[in-house]
Amino acid sequence: MSDSTIISKEQALQSTGQMGKKVHFISLGCPKNLVDSEIMLGHLLKEGYSVTDDSAEADTVVVNTCGFVDDAKKESISRILEMSDLKKEGSIRKLVVAGCLTQRYKDELVEGLPEADLFIGSGEFQNIAKILKNHDEGETQKKFFNLPTYLQEEDTPRVNSQPKYRAYLKISEGCLKRCAFCAIPKIRGNLQSRKLQAVVAEARLLAAGGVRELNIISHDFTDYGFDLRRKNPQSPETPAELLAALSDIKGLDWIRVLYLYPDGITDQMIELIKTRPNLVKYFDMPLQHINDRVLKRMNRHMTRAEIVDRLAKIRQEIPEAVIRTQFIVGFPGETEEEFQELLEFVREQRFDRVGCFMYSPEDNTAGGKMPDQIDDETKQRRHDELMEMQMEISREKHRAFIGRTVPVLVEGLSEETELLLQGRMSQQAPEIDGVVLINDGQAEVGEIVQVRITDSMDYDLIGEIVTDDSEVSEDAHVMA
Image (tube, rainbow, N blue to C red; front, side, top):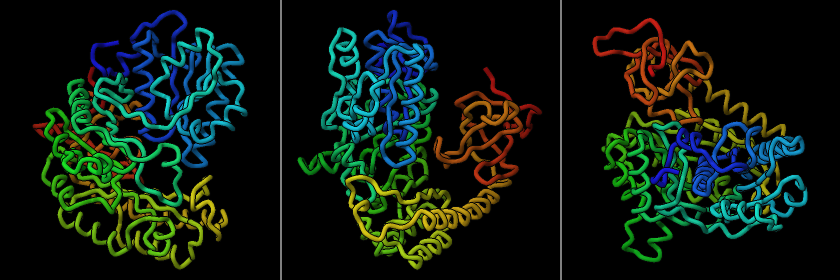
C-alpha cells in the first residue's frame, strides 16, 4: 500500500497481494457505510491483500450490509445468498457478512446463514484484517460484535472507491436524534464527532490526491461537535467552524454538505454557504412531514412554522439555493387531511428535489409499536400522489434551465450510451440526483466545463460544452 493513508481505487486494483489473499467488496446502503467499506479495504491492503472488482476472482468476499429499511434489508440478504451460491460452487473460499444488518440482527443472521464464515458488526469492522488473519490460522470464532464506538483517526488507512475527482468525508458516527421511525441509534449508537483537526487533515489528503468534489456525510451535520462541546464548551468542533476550515483548503472546488436537519441550520451556516464560493448552495434537509401532530408523533423537534421560517431564510439569503428533502407518508395515525396538508405544502414550496418513503415499521422503534398503522394500499396511493405532483414541479424547474450556461463536472461517457458524455452541476449530488448529458463538445474526466443547457427531461438535463470562442465540436468524447 502507498505511504499515504488514503489511496485511490485505481491504485488499490493495481496492488499485488499474497497468494490466496484477493478480496472483493460489495458495499450496500448509504455513503456512510461505503466509507466503512473503504476503511476495511485500507486495512486489508496493509495486510497484503489485493483487490478485485470481480467476485468470481476473489478468495474472500465481504458483503457490507444495510439494515435501515425493508428494501435495504432484502437487498442485503439477496446479495449474501448470491455470494453463498458462488461459495458452494467453489468460486470463492471465504464469505464475510459485515455492517448494519449484521449488527442489528446478529443472532438471526448467524443462525440463518450457515454458509457465511464470519459475521462482523459495525462495532468491529475496523478489526477485519486481524479477524481474517486469525481465522486463516484456525480460530473457530465466527461472530464479532461490539458497541459501535470506533472513530476514524488521522492515520486510518482508506481506499477512496469513488472516481479520483470526488470523495465522501465522514465527520461523525451515531446520532443524537431519536426519531420514532428510525433504528439508526440502535445500530450505530450515540453521536461521536471526530476532532476538527483530524477531519481537516483527511480533507487535505483527499485534495492532494486530486479530489475536487467533497461530500460531507454524517447522520446529522448540524449536530457535529455537540458531544465534544458538552465535555468542553471551548471545543472548536462546530458545524460553522468545520465549514470555514474545509472551505479554506486549496483544490476543493465543490464542498457539498449532506443531511442537514432543519432545526440545526443556523444563520451563521447560511451566511457561510452564501459567501464561500466552494461551499455548494445545496441544502439536503430531511423534513419527513409538515403537519405539527405528525411531526410530534415522529419525535421531530420542529413545528411547521419553524420549518417554513428556515426555508424562507435560506431562499431570502441564497435565492439560487437548491433544496432537497424527503418525506414519509403513511406514518401511524396519519389522516387523509394531514396527508393533504403535506401535499399542499410540497405544491407551495416547489422543492428542487423530493424523495418520498412509504412508512415501514422498524423493530424496536417507537413508531413500530404505535397503534393506527396505515394499510399498504393507502401508503402506496399517497406516495404516488406526492411523487406525481413533484414530477411536474421537477419538469418545470428543469425547463427553466434551458438557455442557461452552467459549470458541469465531467464524469465520463454516459451510462445510457457511449455517444454522450455525462456530468453533474454542483446542484446535483452524486448517485441521488440527476445528471447533465453532453451531446456536443469534448472534455477530460474530472474537468469542470461550461455547458449550455439545450433541453431537459424529467430528472436530467441535456447540453453542449461552450468553448472560449463559443465554438462547439461535432462529437462528444472523453479525452485521454
